[in-house]
Amino acid sequence: MHHRKTVDPGGASGRRARGELESGVLAALWAAHGPLTARQVRELLPGNLAYTTVLTILSRLYDKGMLVRHREGRGYAYEPARDEASHTAERMHTLLERGSDREAVLTRFVSELSEEDEQLLQRLLSGHDARDGAERFDERP
Amino acid sequence: MLISVYVPFLVTAALTLLAPRPARRLAPGPAAWALACAALVTAAGWMGSLALLAFTGFAQIPQVAAEGRWSVSALRAEDPVYLVVAVVSALALAAGVLSLGVAALRQARQVLWARRECARLPGDTELAVLDDDAPQAFALPGGPGRIVVSRGMLRCLTDGEREALLAHERAHLRGRHYLFRTVWRLTAAVNPLLRPLADAGCFVLERWADEEAAARIGSRTVVARAVGRAALASAADTSRSAALAATGGAVPQRVRALLDPPPPNRTLPFVAGALLLTLCCTSLANAASDSEQMVESARRAECVARAGAVVTLQAGQPMKGPALCRAHHKHHED
Image (cartoon, rainbow over all chains, first blue to last red; front, side):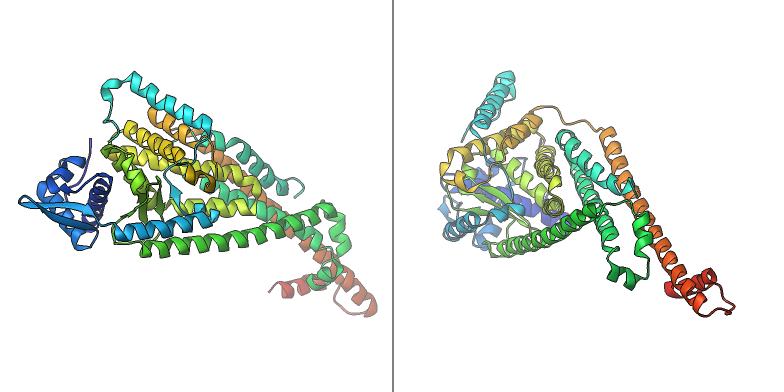
């Protein structure tokens, strides 16, 4: 179901794929409720990534200061570094509140829902569940 | 001139009334390109037609006619445009140009802001996470651009849905979708009638990114759930709702489109649109050449009148009025 290219250290597509993997790893760590080992991270990511690939990405993110880690067994467990991110969050919050004009450049993932939209959406998603429960994807984490 | 100068207005009205609805259902990539072309061509046609209409009025001002050496009476005799139409056109043109300038300035400021913000976000990774419980996700365009997602958003999605969200925002950045949005914003500033086209365009861009994400992760359902779940989570987070503009109905439409089979590739609507745009361009060209001819003949009339005066003054000169005019004209055109 996932067509990830293997990481090729040289070349634009290699860099691009590496960037995407970094995003995936970072997103998984932020979504998690505690520190994760490389093996645990690997399970959260789509596709069959090699263990060493995940390890490389984790240590690169750690080197960049995006992650903190502590010893766990023979390896490390990783967690996102939160100081800078919370500072950024505050700044972003005020920046976004300030100008409605911002919408002209940034493309939001979802727009606002009206009340009817909300009900319709619930129906659409649950209706789809009922129709093909077999193809259901994992529940809320 | 009598009719052709108004054709761009008719094409604009037809497209703005008829295009948005089908555009939302077509394959989103081609639809986005088509809407961008339609907006550009009709905005240019709109400005061109207004300029031609305004010019016919402007050309009748005696001082202007004297400067251009054409006859006001000849122009007035030929001119099929009421003065009041010319004046209204001139005002609409001025308003359009002014509003375009303001919109361009504001857009440029936002693009620069986004670029600066991309550089200021921590790290050099594609994804920048905000340590915030409120669910938020957006793409910030820049050199390569950054994907900005809050922790709250990441936590409300499953593993597959997180990948869908990243793939969606990545599609916006890779496709430079902010350029499309710029085109629609600026053309709608020139002509407010194009606003429905711009709104449809922004919706189509989201659909485009949804479809690309679905192709990337290999499942339309997962993308549908990601969009639905993110929207419901954002709606539940009431603290943010006041700041955002309501764009009702977009999310359910996207989810429904993703749960349905992929949109078919249809050519007929695109051909129809292309024909309308061609009609707009040819009519404008036709009107422009008509008005040029009109001025040309008014110039000749003026010249003949002057030469007549010269000839009567200096009777006995070998050169006749019209011949002198042609010579004079040649000189004038060089």
